[in-house]
Image (cartoon, rainbow, N blue to C red; front, top):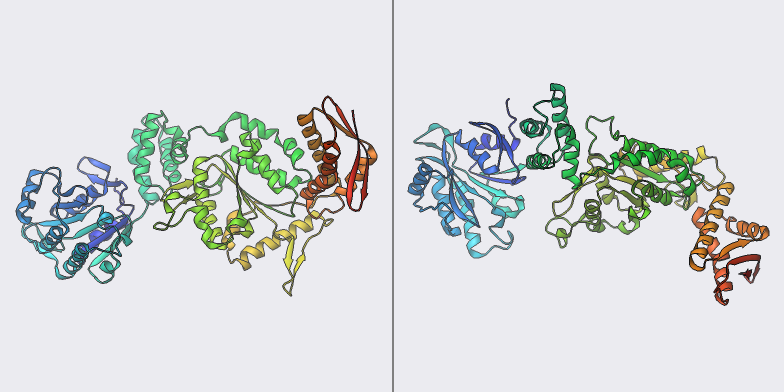
Length: 612
């Protein structure tokens, strides 16, 4: 099997004749798949470099890091003796501490060394200085010497190897390229910057083939089953390192997960939980009986309920993103609830959480009006590296790592700053987000719910805010106008049609509350009041038909605020005067509250109450 060569390594090999120093940053602590004498293997970066350079007649590497000092690689007697003679060193097995001044002299000798090809690797170079923009005197001399050395040395033909002229290079290994003084790379054309990215699909596929025999059941599996295993392993680890693939293999071995459970092994690594509530039999049973339960709490929104249940059933069946070649990392479901205020958008999200996780309070809610400014992205997603608080992570990423199986509600999404909305592109497409600490939160086991009031009011030609749809409009008209307004908002006002494209056909438009539905909502809220009275005082609530009719008329007179407006009116026209009437009475031993009349004088509502 021919192993793919990472781009950064191919660039290093290609540039050795014309570049004297290489700044290598990015994914430097990963493992890399290389061909050894014993066969393909995953090895650290240092050995990867050595395998490549040894093939070009390099005899040894001098490796320095601020913790262990200077050592030889490979740690063999012949290489050590040669390095000690050429550089006048006394190296021990554990390494020798040297000053930056000595290191600068070694760098100078290295570039002009013709007896044997060799290289200097400066590992953990990000820790050479406390701050690259505020160097001490000795640090400044060292980096100036490094810059001068990069410009003054020439490619050589080694006496013991022959071949084409190559530099004896200095290799800086850094977490981030900016951990070195910027002028070192900007002012020297002989310094090349190489960034090691996360492995692509081809590289992960090659690593998956190498690791596959370590999974139980692989040897007995058929060829199609093996091919499917490699495909699932490679596709499910998008954006992950090869070291992560090796860790997944180790965890799978310890937890007894075989070839058929590769998806569970990958998910367990990502979210830290093997138990998958989406595959529980009880959840499928609950979803099959869910429609009456949801419609009891969210009244008069049949299209929204059906759409929500469709997505929930798709999640339970594991068919989210099935139309894509690789959609396993996307969120379990995405819903965009749009419509007037107070019609049940947030209530449906709570009901969905109650249905799946047994507790409506288990959902994660983010009020996007709190993130209207661009700088608030640091609070939601974590500050960028180097900024104050970057090591704390973000509210969203921390919450998802803590509760990987959850419903996440982004309330009033249109109020968030457009730059924050851009982050949702990555969540919706790849199902992951990395915070300022470098920790990745995976959204593959979540359901995302966005709510919005877009399309209810729009701006006319004069910039005035006017009502676009009204109570009483047919649902088809409401849905069409709201969808059109949402499209205009993302396409023209934000110039971000790609966000709308990721949401797809998951926009659910809620209708206005009709008079018939308003009566049902009113009855439900009245029952809640009665239940609270029974819980607090063990008393039953009743009222005459006339009082109920009067109260219903008062609470449903203005439906512009939907069900929330009904609740506000019940509180004002019933709960407040009821509390006033009961406050002065001794309720000890009483069993029944009967409301016989409701009156209003000077805008003050009064109830006539009999307590028995």
